[in-house]
Amino acid sequence: MTSEKIQIKKLSKEKFENLKIKDWPIWEKEASEFPWEYDETEKCYIIEGEAEITTEDGKKFKIKKDDFVIFQKGLKCNWKIIKDIKKYYSFE
Image (tube, rainbow, N blue to C red; front, side, top):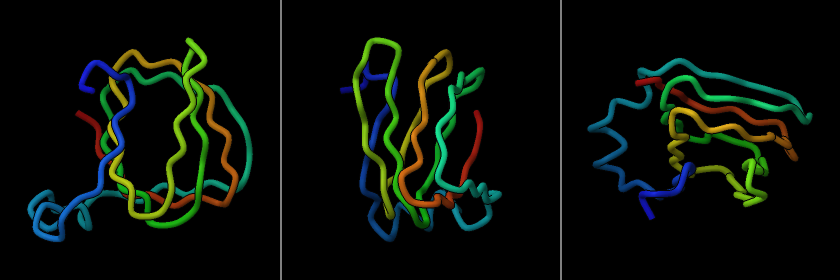
């Protein structure tokens, strides 16, 4: 489903290490809700927490601990953080 604006995957330990994810900066946010727009493609790895992302067309995506997520450039969505979230992130 590469046409999706949001892709959620599980990474092997090898892939996680190859991407050098632990070298990426960390972003944290408490339970809250807010609109967001991506002006760059973001890749992130959820360290802890849980969120529901709703796209402009009403599709809902749930992300949680150990998910590797790609948010495509141009995506407009609404974040609803259910459990305080912490993630590694990288922009392209």
